[in-house]
Image (tube, rainbow, N blue to C red; front, side, top):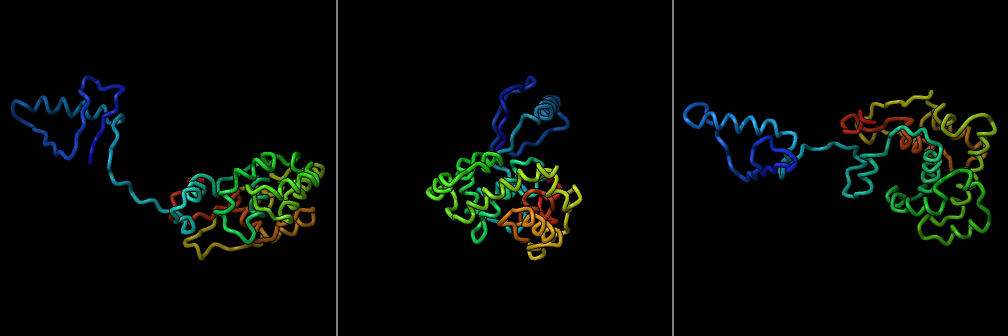
Length: 244
């Protein structure tokens, strides 16, 4: 194990690098005072000292995120299950969850930047204004999933999102109403216990379809509920369980 002292402040102690050396501090004898002084310096400088080469404790994640894929790990560790109450962000997740149908989530994550560029940053009003020319532009864009039905669904869902405003609500308030406005934490011990749909996702699906949304089946709705933090389905032993 190596210790590297940070440069900003040493409180009168010389900076040093200790590599593979075991130090024994004397408690008596002529050098004891010097040793105690050195110990005091080390203690005061502890906050500025970095341990190099120390083995980090194991990090427990949800089984589905047990992967070497950096994008998937980052998504799990920083985004999945975090409560979202921003309409643009919720609309983005709605479009991406629909685009995933029949594909892996890794594929969608790799195309996420392409989607943001192609769909005007997922601003619902901008996407709702897309016309036939935009559809053809999107069909030629390799940065997204070039599926006409999914592209048309995104535009239709943008218009349905705006229609919610006309009905006196928002996409945020409407979606969160299916869980009573607060995240529901499910006691998930293993990946096999995660449902593909629930009574709430079925009710959401039925309601959204009636309002003109498409690509919003019960399974897609539940995936949206998970990603947007309407439910907390991090496994009980996952380090993110109590952080979101």
